[in-house]
Image (cartoon, rainbow, N blue to C red; front, side):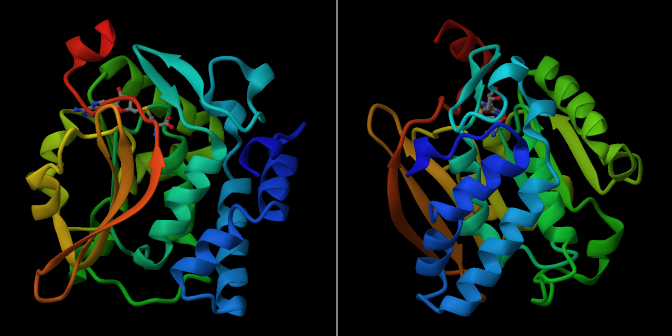
Amino acid sequence: MAWTSSGSSNAELIDNMLRNGILGKVVGDVVDGNKSEAECASDRIARAMKKVDRANYVRDKRDAYEDSPQTIGHGATISAPHMHAYAASHLLPYLPPGGRVLDVGSGSGYLSAVLYHLIEDPHGHKPSLSDSDAKSKPLIIGIEHVSELTDWSISNLKHDGLGEALEKGQIEMVTGDGRLGYPPNAPYDAIHVGAAAPELPQALVDQLAPGGRMFIPIGTYKQNIYHIDKDESGKITQTEVMGVRYVPLTDRKSQEEH
Ligand code: SAH
């Protein structure tokens, strides 16, 4: 189970999640229980998560490999590793090489880093959903409304070996209101929202590429993760996935009073 996956090192934390079925089980559901594809997918997530040392993204390094959320200041938290693993699992088929991803409420930068490694992974073999200039634009955009957190996430990514990806513009961390998305690099093959929206933000739906998926917690007191899938004709399907507890997707003042 989720809370029993804590480890004494990053690799142990990921191996425990793999053993506890947190990476495989969800992916198995997503790909209709096709075991070999599910195993392949969970290995891919484990490989990406092992490249991201959680100690570089937390305030208290003693608890870096605990499978629990941790406060990162400004009313924000870094999510528990199993929640990041779920998010990666649910978005995996929508992360083609050269595709473009928007991480809304990027906080520590941890998930942006995992998504970057997944997009970079040579074993991801689906063709890009995006237009042909995908290569010349950032692969991962993290958008965060607390500028101090944006700055901190950039320094975290650098400590974690992603300085070059930042310099090359393959990862871009921006400060802004994620409820409005980030139009300059739209459309996105995948959109991850790391804070609970009171209702589905239309700007994010508009910025989702045809064939893309958004993973978003929606709700106030009672929250659920939804998949928002856009088909090639632009038709939207909204599927409730699971109950969760996230910090709200809001304005900065309300967040710091929360
Ligand atoms: N996924 C990140 C952060 C999760 S906490 C991690 O694990 O580190 C949710 C984040 O959403 C917080 O950093 C918060 O500041 C941010 N947030 C909340 N409302 C926002 C908004 N309107 N626009 C951008 N970021 C927002």
